[in-house]
Length: 274
Image (cartoon, rainbow, N blue to C red; front, side, top):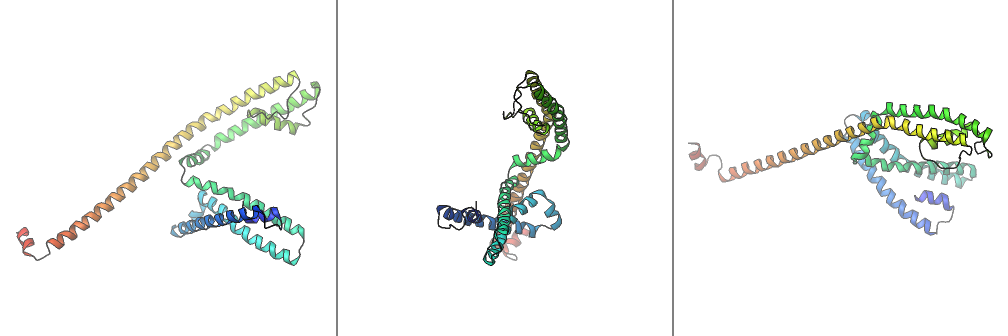
């Protein structure tokens, strides 16, 4: 929540507890966004290829997470100016809708954790590698839903005493919930043949979802091992670099001490050379 969201919700009442709390949260959010913007700007300046920088998914997530804050400030300032001119409430309603959508986009700040989380990186890599398996899973579910939904609708309309399934598209919702083993219970078949169809859809949903999940699990474990090994290699390179820099510093210190103790051209160095 931010100060702008509190202004939209509370209207012109700025003296309540919500206004003070939102103002404090707005200050914290401003500091965080300023830090994120500075970090993003420094990474953009240091990157050699600017186009490749914006093609990376994590950098795009950073842009989408940071921009709503500045757009919200701009739109809020514009809406205040229009309100002073007396442009009407319809424009302010549209501006309020835009501000609510932009505030909802700020949840993408959580995706910044993927830059430092091995688990989220593994999840993203697995989703990228298993697009075919996800497509097969979606295809299996769509075929089964298209099969069981009209069948259950016809059975319930003919044999059930109470009509809970009003249409075939409404039965699609029941099929999705049932085959994914969620089971909200908002629509339940009452007839015995309908319950048999529901049992068949549950069993087929479990089996259809189990087929691609095995391949997805193996891809996830393989991606996790690869990313973990890559992180270990990066840590080893950093430690080697630090050790080399320290050794180089010690070597330069020793050479400086030897130059101080035995300067060039002194009798001691001549005797050592002889």
